[in-house]
Length: 280
Image 1: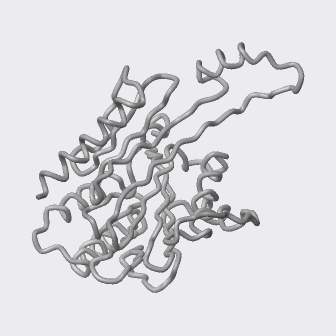
Image 2 (image 1 turned 90 degrees about the horizontal axis):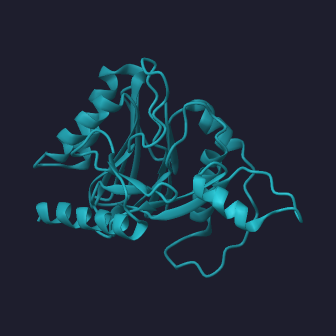
Image 3 (image 1 turned 60 degrees about the vertical axis):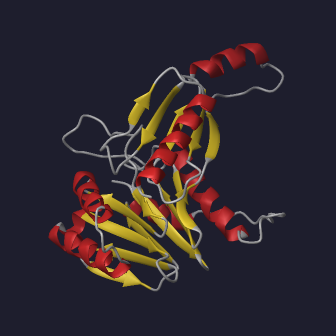
């Protein structure tokens, strides 16, 4: 299963999702790289899915090819697909064709009007809703960004990091849908789970161990500057390995080996520019 949560902040919508793919016929979950669950169609439309991944990607690729694409047409296509697959395929649609719209499609039914929607793992959403929200004051934010957006994003990141729910995990994808264009957002992080004893730590040895990835790893999510493109990269520094998600052209992420972060990030940027030129 998976988790996708979307919240509307005036004209901006944030969509947070994981990448884990669970298949009962496989021996293990596909945690990394998994698959991209929120797919940017163009500068004003993004579709997220939970459930049958192959079927969802096939439907979304068909929508991308439409010459007469509109929000209402896409909602009808997704509603029919959801009805055909029962409880096994749900969608969240974010549109800025005109005004900002956040729409959930589940079991063939259409839900619109709420500021928050989710699809995927019910247990994960229940646990997320019970997390204590930190009382913090964030200063010097851009005028278009609210403090609540930061809290929403960090709460989801921390939940996935803690790995509380089976069937949810992998890479955290942060998709921004705004009147200025839909896109993915860069972020980076580091995880450490070793015990540190104050006063008894060998700094040099610890840095060597960190590079092995046994007790710590760092990652970067790299997004292209071009808006409206369904492409994003995930990079693991310890192994010099990255994955590029391009779901409108490939089912699974492409693995890139032996490349440093700067070169990998540039590769993602170049891919975004190529896709943008194709659509001109």
